[in-house]
Image (cartoon, rainbow, N blue to C red; front, top):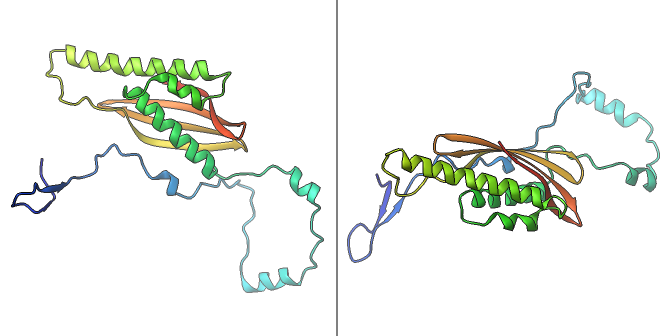
Length: 200
């Protein structure tokens, strides 16, 4: 393996090597601005100085009452930061289950009690599928790799259809295989919990 940077290459201390980041790292989609979909009939705003002067000359309507404001649900473009963090945590635990580093039963604590059985069953089936694929690779007569290729996230898409619910589509890769995982999480007793998990 080619080393990019060597620090203290001689002497009693070993050298420190910096290596390239592997290509299967997840994208930094949490730093992107959420996409706001615009309808075809939306009017364009005129921000010219003349239009702004006309707007400032219009009479101001009285403020809405507190009852009207609180009755409207908050619309979130993309996903809220709390929902995004909960999905990232849940997906990370799912990947650890698929790689065999964590038992599937540990996903029960991040699931709604009524849906925990289905979530754990899907995670167990996915972990078994990964283990079968690794066994099949080594039994074909090929030389087994020193370290089996791990399951990694290559893409994660989020949407929040309503406040208190978030849905995610995840693209996973293991070696030459690509899978999809879909999940839904809901705000249950002030905590984000999974209600549906599907591995395709």
